Image (tube, rainbow, N blue to C red; front, top):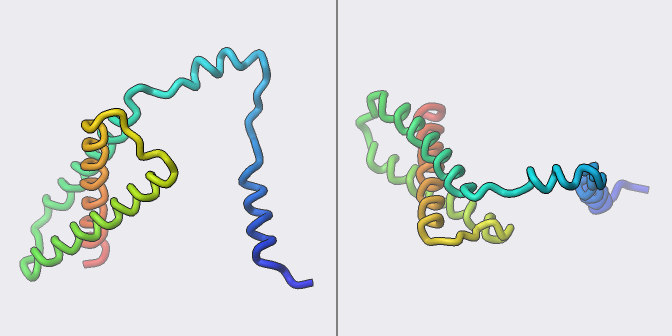
Length: 130
């Protein structure tokens, strides 16, 4: 009997759904104390994105830039960064992880992720491709 591709995918899905948590009743009190989510998760992620983006921008602008068609290339890298970040926002929205309690947190996270993705695209293009 030939191998069915969908059966293989079903097997992989079953492997991913295995519950590997080892919960016992005495440890629940300790676990509940440590399982509380941080109140400042959005700010931590946004700050991390901004720090990494600033380091990448410093690496990018520290070297002399090429003279030929620099503005057109820069605009294309920025456009690619926006498209990738909006794809990430769309994925987060469908995973129900794109929920913020205030507009400030939404703007901080969105702008920091956009700057981070643009810096990655610039570094990848100018350091590794050109």
